[in-house]
Amino acid sequence: MTDTSKSLEMHPQGWGDPAAATPLPESARGLIELAFGVDRRPAVDHVELPASGLAPGLLDGLRELLGDEHVLADDATRRLRTRGKSTPDLLKARAGDLSDAPDAVVRPDGHDQVAAVLAYAVEHHLAVVPFGGGTSVTGGLAARREGYAGLISLDLIRMKRLLSVDQVSMTATLEPGLRGPEAEALLAEQGLTLGHYPQSFEFATIGGFAATRSSGQSSAGYGRFDALVMGLRVATPRGEMVLGSSPANAAGPDLRQLLLGSEGTFGVITAVTVRVRRLPAVKVYEGWRWPSFVEGAAAMRHLAQAGLLPTVLRLSDEAETSINLARPDAIGGESAGGCMMIAGYEGDPEIVEARRSVVTAILTGLGGENLGEEPGQSWAHGRFNAPYLRDALLDAGVLVETLETVTFWSNTDRLYADVKAALEASLGEGTIVLCHLSHVYETGCSLYFTVAAKQGDDPLGQWLDAKAAASDAIIDAGASITHHHAVGTDHKPWLAQEIGPLGVSVLRAVKADLDPTGILNPGVLIP
Image (cartoon, rainbow, N blue to C red; front, side, top):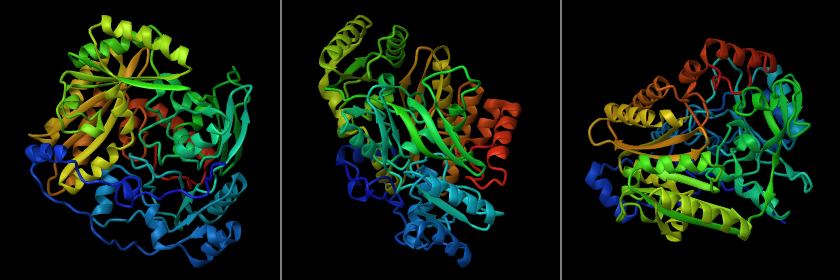
């Protein structure tokens, strides 16, 4: 039986498991020294947290609700629940700024306790930040605290149960605190899989996937997370919402979609019913080489519009291919040139063989070169490791961050060029901008950019200026400010431009109705 009682805590000043952090490989170090030189920027060793501002009486009240051991105000726990894992978040932490630390961390054990905490927070005007895995990269955990009696982190770490499985309908109901590997392990005991594998998979949670409209690396085969959600149970300051009585209906607007992507501002998701599939008997990943990014993208579009997508399909541009970013085991090593595509197939052997055969014939006919399984297996082996590389680069004085967007096929070339140009103009000579197409649809695709530049005297300001320039370019090109990273605080100004004044008014009206005193994640998402 899978034990989900304990979860590994992420590094407070970096990504993931502290034991998994590694220095730059020699091949990558040479590339970095050539491009940027070496300017060591180690993180501050010890950081003092601001004292908790929560009155002792309020802490006592929370302990009466949850028990003493589940209401924590010690510095170590508060530090681990401070902000997310964007480069701005890490730059602040590395410089000793933990001013967004919560006053206390509370850990409910089910829907009723979540509801009780929200009622208490309303009564005493406490800001509440729902916390799943802490993997936000858009400021989604940096809530506004001004005007509140305190700020508490509502840590869902105890809510890790598989509540039910319907083997006939192929659905499962999961609690929100389950991390990706924990959820997959529980489902595997039933012969099932969710198939949702974002880069944050090892640490992000079921609740976080839903609250941010996550999209995984296997979305071509399994679908985005919001497409997998059949039902939700949500605790709000106004009461409970239970949504999802059927797989599809015409019973007015789908309120599930209102809560998906709401980033903890409308309510706290306490259970998620998802579509599941049988565990795949076969997983095969392979590499393809394309002469150009344009030709590779055209091939992806062909597959999507023919209804023949593999489970995994992604394409690196020439720059990303040249440094082997799609193959973490070989970063900085010799590249075959052109553009690297990764295609993956999962399922029963006969289905995988049939789909792979058809796709291989199409890609070959369109000019692709099959490189075999070695590049695909290399990608699969290191698919969750890229954020560790960012930490090592920050140590070496390199400013590195990612951003993503999504658009229609007809707009892809313009968007790609405009975002690259905006980043290069803002960050200056020597900036490296890489891109890959990460998610594919019949009508369009997501572009995922990785940016590296030499850190200046103010790396935080340096990146914020560059991100603003790129965000302006995205909106000016008619694309979306985010495909799967969500809005948080970082994207709010551009969300307002994307949805317009009336759209903002609708979000504010929903917020006012479900959370009239504004305690839930204040300052996040809603412009």
